[in-house]
Picture: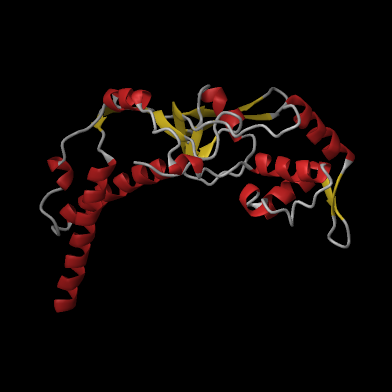
Length: 266
């Protein structure tokens, strides 16, 4: 399964690929509540990560993969908001107007977001007449960046493929300290996403659907028995692949449709 995930800032760049050599659930577990002698309440989360390792063949292929040099899809990678902001600051530092600059669209496609980030950092200010200017902090910052790189902006880091743990959960997280907390459980985690947790829940629902159908004799048996087990045993049970889960979902929907048609004919 592939998709989009949140990457650990400073460790990965937009457009990089993270191959999860270990997938685990970061928000599953129980909360242990304890009280001090004075009655102070303390909550301690006891994680139940349920890790799933990557197939060894896939791991070796990911390690050996080398993209073609100067591939179009790599060259089209979006610049980070930090890099776009640095370009704005450099233009202001040089006495130019970044908004009307000939390279503005190319170098700063996410203009609004990059500008807001600079305002939040206190690096620029916008006057009542919508004039953009450098603050003292912004001038000090970009002066140092240009000094460190001999008067020019640093080049974008090269594209990388990372082999690292990916955490999955059931909730959308907008927490800048998320990776810092996750690293307490898994030191090398680089990605966070929701899709794998969703498919795990989907498998559970399909299984319950078949149990319900068998109990009412809408189906004779569960197709789970026909799916060969894949992966390591998980708490005494075998795991199923995501593609097999999708097949089960489609069959389950067909059974439900047939049941509805049967009702309408009565």
